[in-house]
Structures are given as C-alpha cells and as structure tokens.
Image (cartoon, rainbow, N blue to C red; front, side):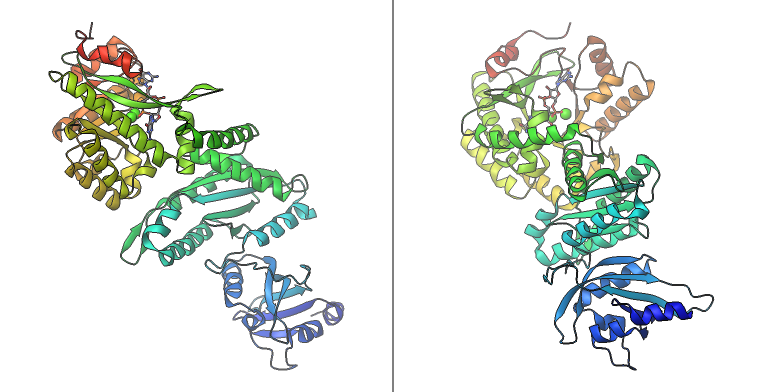
Amino acid sequence: MPHRFRTLFQHTGDAVCLADAEGVIVEANPAATTRFGLAADARGHLRDLFADPTDWAGVARRLERGEDVHMPVRLRAPSGAPVVESITCVQMRDGPGAQIQAIVHAVHNPYGGDLHELYDGHTGLPNRAAFVTQLTRTLQSPAHRGSPLAVMHVDLNRFHRINESLGHETGTTVLSMTAQRLDACLRPGDVVARGSGDDFLVLLKDFVGEAEVVRVAERIARMLTGGYAVGEHEVFCGSDVGVALGEGGAADADTLLRAAETAMSSARRTGRVQVFRPEMRTDAVQAMRMDTDLRHALERGELRVFYQPVVGLRDGRVHGFEALVRWEHPVRGLVSPADFIPVAEDTDLIIPIGEWVLREAALQLRDWQGRYPEHPLGMGVNLSVRQFRPALVQQVRTVLEHSGVDPAGLKLEVTESVVMADADDAIAILHQLKELGIKLQVDDFGTGYSSLSYLHRLPVDILKIDRSLVVAMPQGTKHVSIVRAIIALANTLALETTAEGVEDAEQADNLREMGCTHAQGYLWSRPVPAAQAEPLITAPPLTR
Ligand code: C2E
Ligand code: CA
Ligand code: CA
C-alpha cells in the first residue's frame, strides 16, 4: 500500500478491513480494531463481524456475484450487542495472484442506533427499509445523476394460497426460491429486496431504454411462473411485475416505489408486465373507489345477471344461455364486468359475487327447464381463477340441491389459465365437479397457452372458441386454419364447440361449414335481462 494510503488507512475514523478470497481478515485499521474488538494479531473472519449469520450470507452471495455491496447491516459490537452500521464491501483485484478480495468499510451507525431489522430472515435479502435507503442513495449519488434507473415491484400472485394450503414452511421455501430466481435474472449492481409479504423490489441501473427493462421484467415474470419443487409438491405461483422508470437526481424513492406498485396493479389487471404511466394513477384511484362500492353492491342488490343465447348452428335454435353479470352502479350506470371482475378478483369479493351469480343462474335455469320442458336448455356460468379452490365443489353441490336444477344443464366456464396454473390440483377439482353431473367448458380457448396437448387430461365437454379468433377469420387465412384445427381437434376428442362473438352471418356460415356446433354473439342477441331472453327460447330458428 503506498505510504499516503497507509496513512489514510491508519487515521480514518471509519472502520476498514481487508480480507482474502476466503473472507479471512488480513488487515484491519485501528478504527476497525476498536470498533469490532479485534485482537491485534488474530484478525478472524469477516463473517464474525456480523451479528446475524443471514446478513453475512446475503453479503457473501452478492460478493460472489461480483456485486459491490453498500447497505445497512447489523454488526457485532465488542460487547457482543448488535449495532446497525452502514457497510461497503467491494472486491479488489490487486494485480495477478491477488490475495485481497473484500474490504469492509463500516461508517459508524447513521441510523441513530435504531435496531431496525434490515434484512429479511427468510430470504437473506435486504428488506424494504434497506431498499429505500439504497434507492435514495443511488438517486442522490453524483455518479448516477442523469442516468436512467428502474424500480420494479414484483408480486407473487398465488402466494397466500400456498401458505394457506401447504403451510408456512412451504411458503417460506417458495419465498427463498423466488429470491434465488430473481437473483439469477439480475446483473451485478442491480439490487433485489424483499418488500412486504409476498412482494419483492428490484432496482436496475445501467440499461439502455425502456425496452431493455421490459425484457428483464418479462424474464423475471417467466422465471417465477415455472413450478417450484417443494418436498413432494410442485407449486405454481406466477407473478405480476410493475416497472417505474426514473433518472438519478430527478426522482425520489417514494414516488418511484409508489409508481412501480401502481404499475403492478395494472399488470395484475391486464396479465402482463406494465411500465408506469400517469393515467394508471386515476385507474388505481377508481379501482379503489370501486372496491369500496363493490363491497356494498351485493347487499344493496345492485348486481344483475344478463343472459346471452347460445345458438345451435345446425338448427338455428336457442340451446341455452351464458350468464353474464352486470353492475347497476347508482352513479356510474351499468358497469361492465370487464371493469369490476378484476377488482373483485383482487379483493376476493369474487367469491361471494361468483356464488351469487351461480345461484341466480341456476334458479333461472330451473325455472326455464320447468316451463319449457320440450326445449332442453343449458346455462354457462363463468368461474374466476380465484373461485377455483376445493371449497368450490361444495358450493356447487349446495346450489344444485337448493335450485333443484338438472345438473346436466349447468355448464361451468373456466379459462385455460385456471387449469394450467395449478394443473394437478385444478384437475382434481374439475373431476369432482364432473362427478356432480354438470358440464365443463374451456372459455376463451385459443388465447392463453393454447396448449392442445393437455386437453385430453381434462374432463371437459365444450371448447369455447375465443372471439378474437372468430373476429379475425375474414382477414387471415391463418386464423381460418386455426379455427378449423380447433374444431377438428374438438371433434376428435368428442367435445362440442361454441364460437364466441359471432357478429355477422358470414362468420356463422363459415363456422357451421367447419363443423362448429354452437355459437353466440350479437348476430343473434346481446346479453339481455331474463325477461327479454325468455321469448328467445321458443322463437323460430334464428338463422337467416
Ligand atoms: P366472456 O366469458 O368471454 O364473455 C363473453 C363476452 O363477450 C361478454 O362480455 C359478452 O357480452 C361479449 N360478447 C358476446 N357476444 C359478442 C359479440 O358478438 N361481439 C362482441 N364484441 N362481444 C360479444 P361481458 O358480458 O362484458 O363480459 C366480459 C367478461 O367478464 C366475460 O368474458 C367474463 O370473463 C367476465 N364475466 C362476466 N360475468 C362473469 C361472472 O359472473 N363471473 C366471472 N368470474 N366472470 C364474469
Ligand atoms: Ca364465458
Ligand atoms: Ca369467452
């Protein structure tokens, strides 16, 4: 060490240690000797400076990744008591054959002696408080002035279910596996922290443009979607990722964190990674108000069920209906389910709402089955992912008993994602539902995973071909081929097909010619209240 640096080393008030590649301390300055109570000759190991082994594990892992670490940790005072100090650990290459690998530089406790927990014990990651400190420091650092930064809010969306059904130990394992996967998606210099509960925070530096950040965010979302093998369980848990972009010197930590969280809510609603835009804030405020209003909607009787006829393409007659919920909001008027179902899903209000729709639709079907015995009718009822839990089976059984409906007429609609996300559990529930004698349909087929290979594993009866494919048919021969292939496949598996969103006669003709059995759409009728739907049951064939 050149003389002038040695002088600095000896006299600075900050504690500085040099350690070798194994973490064994080879030099410590007097400030360090006093602060950590190190013996003059036997220096010990860096690990021993830490009051909590998980703190050290976190630092060591990041050093291994080639990352420089700046963060508050709990160090051990000579008395043995933990003291929160801000440390810097950097790797040094001291020429070829370098011995010295790490340097700990502890600035005396800038946190006012408060013993905050700065690490998350489960994952070894810094916690939210530590992340905020780090983010603030980065934003204020001259080195990052004017350069782009991104904060990501990563939310595990099925985590509470894992905790509930498989226990906290499994939950904790999933969290630490998530931490490792996040780590693997990031580069040295990026920061990842555990937020609160089931969310994680990421700080990205040194990237070029929004597209690169979105790519990283999408990679994260993909990595977290894959199954987690925990003991004998295969757990699936998916994530929603929101991104906020900022610039060193021009943003503050709090604003960025809130923006990232808002973007995450939008990601949850849309099902894809979202970068924050100011208008999302109004969306979020509206969603919040909607959430309080929606709580009362059920008890105040503001929900309605509308019915859209499902038409047999061969005979042009109404073979049944799809029940579609509506909200008659006292101020906003009729609110679309596309707007409030996602809110209901976020708040778990979907459970009572879904149950109410199911009951209403079953009673309506029972009524029509009784009065029009010569017209066998079916009733499609949508099920949200959130309703898809073991309790659902009992719920459906109760509704069947109370309504006295013929079970074969009830056709529950589930999307592909429901089945794919949690395949084994979901398939078990589907089988139990089938045992009640009801029918199952795959909704929005052709939009999600569109994985045909899993279909034969599922006890389903009907495929509903998504409107986007039907709409696209006239333009693209490709879409015609896809629809044709879906129908052919369904026929091979002895499944019925219902095309959604048929708006003109040409589409209907094409579909009929391809062998599609049923369809619904504005061509025949929009979803309407029961009183308007009823005459359709006995109406003459609705085809031209
Ligand atoms: P979905 O299950 O795919 O329902 C079909 C949607 O397409 C309905 O929208 C229907 O009104 C609309 N539609 C039908 N024919 C046509 C057409 O010819 N052209 C066009 N452009 N649209 C057509 P709606 O009623 O707004 O419902 C939207 C979504 O909300 C539904 O999509 C479903 O995912 C969800 N939803 C509705 N009711 C419930 C419910 O009771 N429970 C749950 N979990 N979700 C529901
Ligand atoms: Ca549907
Ligand atoms: Ca659909």
